[in-house]
Amino acid sequence: MRRLLIDRTRCDGHGSCAELLPELLDLDEWGFPISLTGERDPAVPRSLAAHGERAVRACPLMALRIG
Amino acid sequence: MTTTSIAPLTGTQRVLAVRTESWREHVDALGPAPRLSSDELIRLVDSAGLTGRGGAGFPTARKIAAVAASRRTPVVVGNAMEGEFLSHKDRTLLDQAPHLVLDGLDILGRALGSRRLILATGERIDSTRVRRAAAERPGRLVDVRDLGGGFIGGQESALVSQLNGRAAVPQDPHTPVYVRGIDGRPTLVANAETLAQLALLARFGPDWFRSQGTPDDPGTFLISVSGLTPPSVLEVPRGIRLREVLLQAGVPLERVGAVLLGGYHGTWLRPGTGDVRLCEEDLSPYGASTGAGILHVLSVDSCGLRVSAEIATYLAAQAAGQCGPCVNGMPRMADTLTRLAVPGSDPRLVAEVDRLRGLVIGRGACAHPDGTARFVASTMLVFARHVEAHLRGECHETSVD
Ligand code: SF4
Ligand code: SF4
Image 1 (spheres, rainbow over the protein chains, first blue to last red):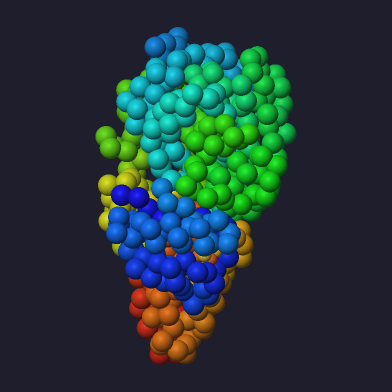
Image 2 (cartoon, helix red, strand yellow; image 1 turned 30 degrees about the vertical axis):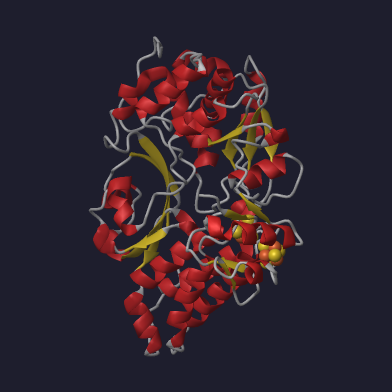
């Protein structure tokens, strides 16, 4: 299963990722993404692959990757 | 493959039994470090069951195999950063047996064909002796580097980052140092004690190594004991009972309120757990481990909540300010615990501590938030009655040691 890998050293919060991938991500009270699957890096089911790619491209800090 | 004419050290004192300052003395006492191929070394370490003594307790054979599998030549780094200030073992080893630690680097470096061997020493360590030792040895020169970085300076990727001339902060774990480390090369980072243990294991073999400890958790380990007794470093077999360590360190058992095992990322244990053996099998039900070999004793007269709040505050300040959940969540968690440590505190703070714990776990680049959250969880569990007393406005604290 491919995962959405979040580079926490790059992420600056307040992001578009949770908006583009509400199935997998939420934001905490400071605006940083929370994995909704409970996994460190949420698994991306095939049905969400396109949304995942879009979130990766939308992150201004290139903190996301699918792998 | 592990041939030496020197008689093996008997008893529980192994790495601490070696006190050889000069190279000549060292070789006379122990013989030269054996040369092993990487396959031989991996087999040897695997059959001995040696695990990393720096905190994570990961099987050393697997770590070696990970870099040996790479097509590029690996770099080997000895880790004597000792960022935990309750720990004194690395310093003790580098003082008493610098050549033993250097032997470990030598054995790994030769087996892996490394051209670069580095020993990183932290800010609380005086590297004079080990530098002198490194200079008088034949063979590849070990590059001894004095580094900084505080509590997390010894975290593998933070250490590698610092050695690469960048900030001493952890890197994204999705690219581990065994894949890309020093100068982009696969890098093996091994704790100073692990190196010293390896130096003896390579000489005396896996059966000797396994003659101490338990079948699942073999060998001896160093433990830094503090609190209610002058700080000391002991070498004990894995699986020794907690009570036995306290007695050996001269701790008055009737004065023990709780013990913190594993350092600031560790776990509080109640005094009733004296029979627990310090090995993975007995400790894992408590979510505990010996970590980097640290045992800190809290007096019955001290307030565990106050002490824990101070530790959490220190840990929050040690976070390398890069990951949002850690930067924001850790100070808030420490602050909430601090408010709870004041008698007469708001009962809602209990749930708030739990919530913040959940919010930082698994959300940093390194294990600092997870380790701190674990420490805070054990504080709330072990001092649960004390939390209740605080909510009623009471605290039994009569002394602050
Ligand atoms: S879009 Fe990128 S920087 Fe923004 S919160 Fe998401 S991961 Fe972080
Ligand atoms: S989790 Fe905390 S300590 Fe670890 S790298 Fe991120 S900010 Fe630094």
